[in-house]
Structures are given as structure tokens and as C-alpha cells.
Figure (tube, rainbow, N blue to C red):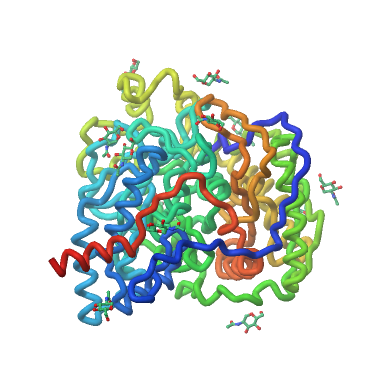
Amino acid sequence: MAPGLFRRMQGLLLVSLSLNILVAARPCYNQSTAINGTAFPPLIEATTEDLVRGLESGLFTSVDLVEAYISRIMEVNSTLHMVTQLNPDALSIAAQLDSQRARGNVLGPLHGIPILIKNNIATADAMDNTAGSYALAGAKVPRDSTIAAKLRKAGAVILGKTNLSQWANYRSYNTSNGWSAIAGQTVGAYFPGQDPSGSSSGSGVSSSLGLALAALGTETDGSILSPSDVNNLVGIKPTVGLTSRDLVIPISEHQDTIGPMARTVKDAAYVLAAIAGKSPYDNYTDAIPFDTIPDYVAACNFSALSGKRIGVPRNLIDLSYDSSAAPIVPAFNAALDVLRAAGAIIVDNTNFTGYDALNEGDYSSIVLEADFVTDLPKYLSQLSYNPNKVYDLEDVRNFTHMFPLEDWPERDTLIWDSALELGYDNTSPEFWSNYTMNRYLAGPLGVTGALANYSLDALVVPTEFSPNFPALIGSPVITVPLGAFPADTEITPNGFGNLNATAPNLPFGISFMGPHFSEELLVGLAYAFEQRTLVRNTITPYVQPTVELVDVVTARLKRAKA
Ligand SMILES: *[C@@H]1O[C@H](CO)[C@@H](O)[C@H](O)[C@H]1NC(C)=O
Ligand SMILES: *[C@@H]1O[C@H](CO)[C@@H](O)[C@H](O)[C@H]1NC(C)=O
Ligand SMILES: *[C@@H]1O[C@H](CO)[C@@H](O)[C@H](O)[C@H]1NC(C)=O
Ligand SMILES: *[C@@H]1O[C@H](CO)[C@@H](O)[C@H](O)[C@H]1NC(C)=O
Ligand SMILES: *[C@@H]1O[C@H](CO)[C@@H](O)[C@H](O)[C@H]1NC(C)=O
Ligand SMILES: *[C@@H]1O[C@H](CO)[C@@H](O)[C@H](O)[C@H]1NC(C)=O
Ligand SMILES: *[C@@H]1O[C@H](CO)[C@@H](O)[C@H](O)[C@H]1NC(C)=O
Ligand SMILES: *[C@@H]1O[C@H](CO)[C@@H](O)[C@H](O)[C@H]1NC(C)=O
Ligand SMILES: *[C@@H]1O[C@H](CO)[C@@H](O)[C@H](O)[C@H]1NC(C)=O
Ligand SMILES: *[C@@H]1O[C@H](CO)[C@@H](O)[C@H](O)[C@H]1NC(C)=O
Ligand SMILES: *[C@@H]1O[C@H](CO)[C@@H](O)[C@H](O)[C@H]1NC(C)=O
Ligand SMILES: CC(=O)N[C@H]1CO[C@H](CO)[C@@H](O)[C@@H]1O
């Protein structure tokens, strides 16, 4: 998501809370999910390693997995609208991967495992890539995006495309998270009408409910972190340049990045390992400082927190922006005790000295506007078929104003109006002075400054407050589930008035930030925290699909007998 960062509504006073994040508990799942005593992993919590075990042992096939996930999607899509399009080739791809496996040709841990991707990451197949806009309905790309190609090379099945806040939330000042003209309003699963946050809204809801192993999101400023936060997920926002933006509908070349949204740190690590790496089509990936991508899965080490110096930039936890976040603070402070008990040295009040200046300035919106008017035409120029003949932002705005399903003017185009009024792109001196200012305030007076001044390995804050500084300097963040809002939380609407922005049971997370390309370190810290707390499975969605692998396999065995 871009500006318009998800904010729980202000003006609430929340008292009485008893979050006990220190009790690690696993719910009792229905034990009837077994055939001949061999249990199938419940899909709402199945991990990569569960699925690999089942595929290797022949308990189920990749085709079974695709069928089960599609059934689950169809069960909840009419309520939650999280998937825009299924891949019509998913079953045949899975069948092919099954026979490859039978021949002993296994491409890697994701072989035959379904993944959903956000509807701004292009695939050269039957699926559209629209950012949720009719302006791009039916448009074609000349080849797979680098990210999609890497997923396929790793053996993953691209199961479908997830709904998003239209244009990755870079169109309107007044709209709702998770709405796009093409697929309607995505809704979260933890409370009726839950604001799913955004812009990777459908990826968040889908991954959380076990509609695929995991999903990919994209982030400019919060769009992976925030929907992971409120949908009870682990989300990795990688360093800008670690994952290629080739053929991903852009907002900003300086801030955009693609990353996994998964149910566990290790699953996110498996997916990151598959998508990280250089791309001839995105020269920001030339900044990757290592010859081989680190082993993010091996980084999942229970002892990773031992001896690590972790700072707390307290002044980021600013309840004057969002008083409804108050219940997160005691849960966060309890998490610091977990980190200490795991051997970390907590250094409190490593405040970001650039915080006030950054909030008072307008630098970041100018950077995004100038980037968007530059980068959108670059994407559009690569289309091999451009049915609505949109070549730049003015064309897209005109299309949006004229096409009724785009819901204009109720949902405005004020961000674009402002970008077009700016009158310059990201090659101008005005752009560079704003960009430089951003990087100074968020770097030396922010993330990199605090890391250096206090000799820290990493920083932690509640995820609600984590995206902005790292967004402006392109540094990585990982969020892990931390807790949920208490039962007496007041229910309040979002700004557009069509969703519940605050409510009981809405999840929230904790973020670990580090230097550029420190994902290996951050994955370790996040894993060591996650394994000591296991909060995710204590928070239950109010709506869940019921189809399980065992149902699909039982039906298949019955068909084979008949
Ligand atoms: C377990 O699942 C089966 C099959 O879906 C269902 O018939 C049964 O009622 C469930 N039992 C419980 C305790 O939920
Ligand atoms: C379950 O066990 C029965 C009896 O041993 C056997 O006939 C059947 O094939 C087994 N089913 C599966 C799915 O392994
Ligand atoms: C899910 O629902 C949305 C909104 O109704 C719809 O646009 C989309 O096609 C549906 N997806 C699937 C896979 O049926
Ligand atoms: C918000 O929550 C209230 C209380 O559960 C519910 O009545 C209402 O329908 C929800 N809003 C939406 C948009 O679903
Ligand atoms: C990166 O590629 C873009 C075109 O995609 C080009 O304009 C730019 O000069 C390149 N930058 C470097 C440092 O090579
Ligand atoms: C896990 O981390 C601990 C502490 O840093 C280290 O001593 C140990 O070697 C690591 N284990 C693995 C398997 O890397
Ligand atoms: C850091 O910020 C917090 C919250 O704004 C404030 O209470 C504290 O005094 C600050 N500490 C330092 C050392 O600036
Ligand atoms: C967009 O619409 C405006 C106002 O209607 C018009 O002046 C302009 O020529 C249009 N631009 C394009 C590229 O069609
Ligand atoms: C930022 O952009 C604005 C608007 O174009 C311009 O007035 C200003 O000089 C630029 N630089 C800084 C550092 O504000
Ligand atoms: C780091 O130290 C420098 C030099 O004292 C100071 O200018 C800067 O504000 C500090 N940054 C942070 C985040 O503490
Ligand atoms: C945003 O749009 C909604 C729905 O049209 C409207 O009720 C609300 O007043 C608008 N808010 C602002 C700040 O314009
Ligand atoms: C490609 C696709 O799934 N399109 C659907 C998107 O949503 C609209 C409105 O709900 C449907 O009419 C389309 O069929």
C-alpha cells in the first residue's frame, strides 16, 4: 500500500486487556482427517514441510492439493472476495509436476505446491494482470514476470491471482482497502466486515485461511506488512532489489518490492528463497551483494536471538496517530521479555531522530508521484497487447473517469491528479532533492542511524508502526503474529464507511527491521520469536472453509474403485 496507510480509527479509549501472548497453545483440530490412521495436515495450518512429506509419501498428489485449495476458495470467495481469478491451467500443471515427481525429477521443496500471487504480478498465460482496473482487462505481456518464472522454476503451481486495493492503493484518497473495480471488495476473516488492510489484501486473507501454501504480495509502503499484520500472518518485505519487479505493475522503482505472506516464518523463508535473485530486466537487483542467495530456510534457528542487540525506536509507537492501537503496546512490551529470555539484549529508546521532520515534510508523496508518472508508462510500454490503448497516467485517468465500473467519482483519482499536477518525473532536480531528503531522514536519522549509533543487529516495533521508515530507504522488514484485539474492542468503520476497521479478534504483529539485505538475519530472529510464542494458531477466523485434503483424496479413491 502506498500513502493512505491502513490506520485503525482514532479517538478510542481501550481499557482492560488480558493478552497472554506467552502461552503457546495449539488448537485441537478435527481428528477425523485421516485415512487408515495416517493424518492429513489441516490446510489452515499445513506447512511446506507437511506438504512435502505428504507428496513424497504418496499420501496425496499435487492435483489433490490444487483441487482442495480450489474447493476452499470457492467456499469462501463469495463472502470474502479474496481471489480474482483461478489459473485454468493449474490442474494440468499439477498433473505434469506429479508425473515429474514420479520420475524422480523434483525441482525443489516447492515442487507441486500451490501459491497465489497478487494481481499486479504478470504471467504469460490465461490469467490477466490488471491491478484490479478495467483499463488493463485483457492486456497481454510478452513473457512471465521474473518472479512468476522463478516460482515455476522452483516447481510451484501458480494457483491464481489475488484481489488487491486497486492500483496497489495508489489512486484515491478516499477508498477502501481491498477494493478493486475488477473483483470487488475483499473482506478479512477475523470479524464480519473486517477491513483486510492493503494493498495485498487478497493475498493476506487467502494465505491466512489456507487457500494456498502462501501468497505473494507487493509493497511500496506497508502493502505486505499491513495486511500480514491484520490477517495473522508472517510477511517479509524484502530489501528493494532482492526480488525483481520486472513485469510487476509499479508504483515506485525506489520503493517497490515483492515478498511472501505465509503462515509461518519457515514457509515465508521457503518462498523467499524461490523468488530472490538477480534479473536481467530489473537492474536494482544488481545491488544484491552476494553471489549465492543465503539459505533463508537454514536461517530458521531457535537460538538465533542469542546475544543479538535489538533496539526499540519508542518514538515510532505514536498513539497520537492511532489511539486504537493502544492494546498492542503491552503485548509488544511482553514480547520484549520473550526476546530477552531468548538471550537478546534489548536497547530501549533508540529513537529515530528524523521522526518529526519526516512527518512534517511532504517528501515521500512527491517521490512516489514522480516515480509513478515515470514508471507506469515503462510498464505499459512492455505490453504485447494493450486493448484500451493506455500508455501513461493521463490515459489511465481518462479511462477511469469514463468507465462506470471504475466507481468514479465516488472513489476519486486525487493521487493521480496530484501526480499529474506535479509536472515533473523522477529525472528532475526537484525529485532528487526530495528523494535525498527522504533517504537522509529515514536512513541516518532513522533505521541505519539507529543501528549504527547503538551498535544494534536489528530493531523491533509493533507492525502497525513499522512500514514507513524502511519503505523510504528500501530496507527489509519481517512481521510475525503477536496477538489480537480484546473482546471489548469498540467496532468502528473505515474512512470510506463500508468495512469494520476496529473490532475484537483482529490480529496484530511485531516487526523486525534490519540493514539492507539482512533477510537471513531477520528470518532467524523472527523464527526464534515465533517458535517461543506460536500466537497464530490461538486466533481463530470467524469464517473458514471446510474442505480438507482428506475429502479430496477419499473422493478420488472412491472414484478409482467405482
Ligand atoms: C469432523 O469432521 C467430520 C467431517 O468433516 C464431521 O462430520 C465431524 O462432525 C467433525 N467433528 C467435529 C468434532 O468437528
Ligand atoms: C486402507 O486399508 C485397507 C485395508 O488394509 C486397504 O485396503 C486400503 O487400500 C487402505 N487405504 C489407503 C488409502 O491406504
Ligand atoms: C471471487 O469473487 C469475486 C467477486 O465476486 C469475483 O470477481 C471473482 O471472479 C471470484 N473468484 C473466483 C475464483 O470465482
Ligand atoms: C461490522 O460489524 C457489525 C457487528 O458485528 C456488523 O453488524 C456489521 O455488519 C459489520 N460491518 C460490515 C460492513 O460487515
Ligand atoms: C537500469 O535500467 C533502466 C532501464 O530499465 C535504465 O534507464 C537505467 O539507466 C539503468 N541503470 C543502470 C544503473 O544501469
Ligand atoms: C544456531 O544459532 C546458534 C547461536 O547463534 C549457533 O551457535 C548455532 O550454530 C546455530 N545453529 C545452526 C544449525 O546454524
Ligand atoms: C524516545 O521516545 C519516547 C516516546 O516518544 C520518549 O518517551 C523518550 O523520552 C525518548 N527517549 C529518548 C532517549 O529520546
Ligand atoms: C484526457 O481527458 C482530457 C479532458 O477530457 C482531455 O483534454 C485529454 O486530451 C485526454 N487525454 C488523453 C490522453 O486522452
Ligand atoms: C520537493 O518538491 C517540491 C515540490 O516540487 C519542491 O518545491 C522542493 O524544492 C523539493 N525539494 C525539497 C527538499 O523539498
Ligand atoms: C546517529 O548519530 C548521529 C550523530 O550523532 C546523529 O546525527 C543522528 O541523528 C543519529 N541517528 C539516530 C537515529 O540516532
Ligand atoms: C469518503 O467516501 C465516503 C463514501 O462515499 C463518504 O461517506 C465520506 O464522507 C468520504 N470521506 C471523505 C473524507 O471525503
Ligand atoms: C476474471 C474474473 O474473475 N472476472 C470477474 C471479476 O469480477 C466481476 C465482478 O464480480 C465478474 O463479473 C468477472 O467475471
